[in-house]
Image (cartoon, rainbow, N blue to C red; front, side, top):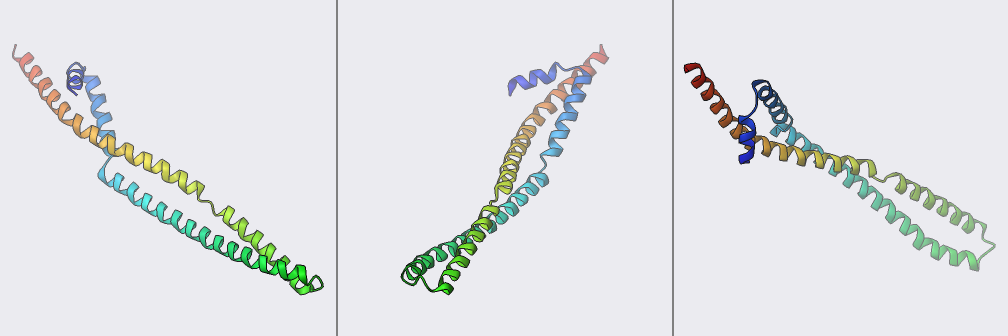
Length: 157
């Protein structure tokens, strides 16, 4: 970052004030509290996604159980075509299975996954900004000291 020091040294007072304001904004935006808040939000989203996936898995297990039972019931219905109750029971199970599949489809955490991805990107950017601001702050202090020294020297002459 040797070049950035040169950049700071060549700024007019107005430009310098603008850079200081931008750096303050970056510092405020990338505060440790803000980053921690995003981390906590990410943990919350992860828990919600995990809960949704556990629910989907549980419903998937119910669907699998119905499938296994339907194979046995189908065999029975084929041998006993006159048993209306067994056929009706089979129809109800097929409808229930269909309803469970609709629930699984509706429980996709797509929106939460998108929000998690966006938040992770934002958090990573803020961490990088925080590091950059920290690094540039020392260069700005050095440049400000030199600017002050040049002004004092100019007033003396």
